[in-house]
Length: 403
Image 1 (cartoon, one colour):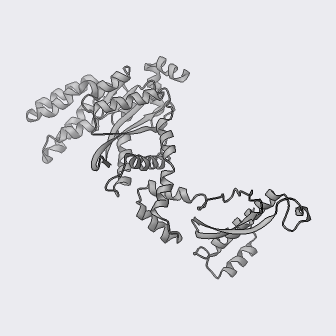
Image 2 (tube, one colour; image 1 turned 90 degrees about the horizontal axis):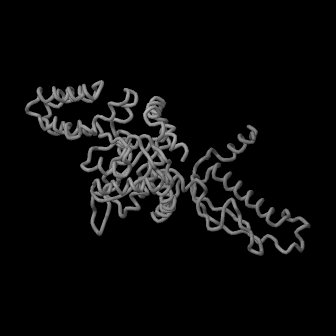
Image 3 (cartoon, one colour; image 1 turned 60 degrees about the vertical axis):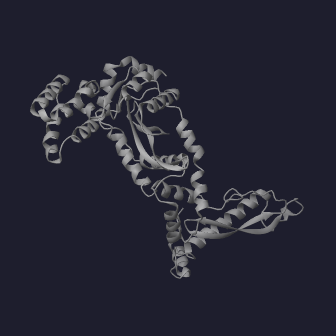
């Protein structure tokens, strides 16, 4: 539909130049259109137009109007809602008990997902739209997604995620009357098509392998039967927990975590030189060459045997990625995928000193995840990775596709 230019010019002229203000043209047009559409709904409900003879003796008729104030992006708006004498008219455009225009709740949720506090949201809505909303209304809107969050947490998973990244984020929450740092366990999976998604969020105490096992059991109970490679941060007992639930899975310790741990034993002035030599280990062409580079490192840095010991203790979990070509190694040698997500989540939680409940924390983290994951694209280099996986584990691929 095209609106004639002359009509637009006439409307602008009669508005006095006030287009989008509290009493501007946009708001008045919205009000007029809403009321016209409600009137049309009532006509349809009654079965005849206003003043038509067909309405005589029909058993129902118009019964004036009632006022309703709605909140929306155009500010607060009072509209006249038509009524029928029998009280059977239930408009669909603006339903009974509805106090906000469609899309207004979505705007509140969007601001909340970006980390804005309740006070921030109230100020923004007042400054931008001249709408005053209570803290209770904002809580009501954000609490309305709790069922959605639970459904997301319990949703069935695919049978195979070739690569899974596991890591935990510390978030302050109130528990038993006091505020503690609690671990939010996060799992990101890449499916056969190369699509990345968050498989779930779980809250426990301090990060530990025992709780991670319960997370892995949850994934399995929800339908995940297999993973080729699971990338972790090297937490003690973590690989054993993974292998207990997914015995055929390769456990890859995150190389970036190992480097950070190694450099924590070294003075600032030595770190750059030592990091360059560590690179010779994890950038080696084969596992055998990497082992030789580690031996050379021991000889070169006799005072830093503790660093070499860190790598030696984790060696069986360091070398799995050497089985793959360079394109695939980039995908599996680090948990950066989940760490990048955690960086985003920290940004949205930093404005809050702590969360009153575990549910409040998960609600915000869920909204933030939905917001950021819309921008995720297919994993780069996935075609080559899937080709390698298919050559190595054809039966497991077939089983997953048949599930």
